[in-house]
Length: 346
Image 1 (tube, helix red, strand yellow):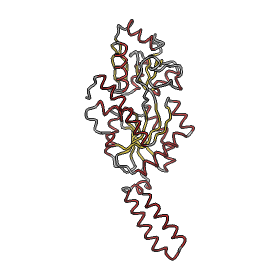
Image 2 (cartoon, helix red, strand yellow; image 1 turned 90 degrees about the vertical axis):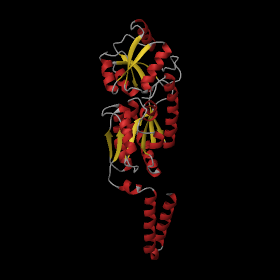
Image 3 (tube, one colour; image 1 turned 90 degrees about the horizontal axis):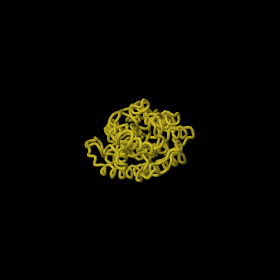
Image 4 (cartoon, helix red, strand yellow; image 1 turned 30 degrees about the horizontal axis):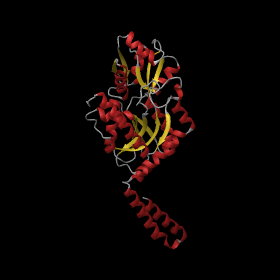
């Protein structure tokens, strides 16, 4: 592509400098431009069209991932010079949206905004996910990290994680349910690790998303839950829920009073989940480069960055290669945890 660009602009310079050659050089330059377009599968034509850029979200409107996508919608549209629309394709932890991305043409008109569950966890816990990230998707860019947290209703007697463990042993007879936003998710495997580490009968109670889980926590129909910091932080700040511990290697800026599991003596949970954007395999490199640049600039806009941080994200721009490396590292960590739990793909 670079060779074609150099050839084109060299011809253009001659076109301006030597009027006598204009007709011949104009025809030659046109042919070079056609060849350049063909070399990237017609991408330049698709990009120049007025077709909107679709960003698929595998979760319902109003959820954390949907909110993030809509925060980025306008700045991306402005920087890319084209309409950006958000399409919600909820279901199966993002599996439906991922399958639709795989089936979409690699023409730079369809992307998928998601987090670690769909890319790193789901293919390990579902026997036939319908997609293989390394084979079917192209990393376009990462933009944030976050952590999962452990919380109880505000009316729960436990004020610390240690007090929660004591409550389970003494008041709940060693057995209690812990809500999780989806089955076979990172929160489920955290619950399994907690049960094993502290010799308790903790049972994962799967919900269809964090919203219904939080509703039951607020009504104290369930005594604890695991969810992302963006799910719980506002409820914690307003005194409706109480976050007792967070994953990750350090305390979170919005929850500085809450210790990490590492501080509490439970190591191995320092790797942070990530948010990224993916394209169908085979999308032109020119597209991924341009979009990754637009994404990096968009999340660093002061207003956008502040809003992302206010919901508990750590803004962290990643190139396509960095996103791929992050994905592989995170997948490896949880592969060991999943295998150690004895979980069998379903």
